[in-house]
Image 1 (tube, helix red, strand yellow):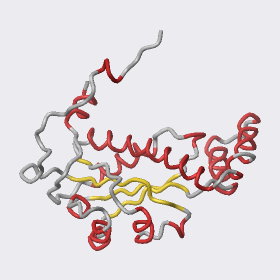
Image 2: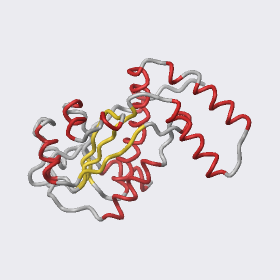
Image 3: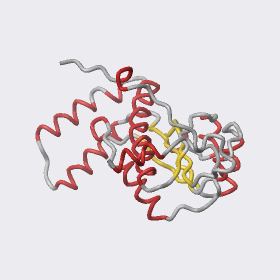
Image 4: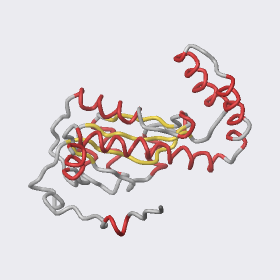
Length: 210
């Protein structure tokens, strides 16, 4: 299958050559992330696309000085909602009703169920839940990048609080959770390029319960 071939081609690129990724490929990757499934369809996160060289330098300084941060074409920052609020939940449900052109009693009952539960929880619990949704979109962006022939580097190795400050995320009710540099591999300077991809055997990974 073409998708599996692309996923076998991809790896966590450790060095990029600075070449720009065409905007249509970036748009396709972002669209794929947008199409990812999330709990209750809330999409409780935002994706920031960083191309400014000076900002990328600041982020590299708080990301273990990893060169892909500055040498990538586009740096995607996945930032989850810091908590769930009535306003945020209502905005999603209102948008759904507007796009579908009708209201469903069952859907409105579900809205009330979420409103009676999520906003009352601790903010940290809500953020952790939202961050897990962001990771679903993050994973889908990685697959989409591979499909487009674009390299990526999944990264958790950065100072979240510092990144939030650089991008003023807390002021927007967001907290960073993971970042994804996109670009093209520099095979001559990437120690990981060309190495055999190693994964668990299917027997070790998958248990079938009939």
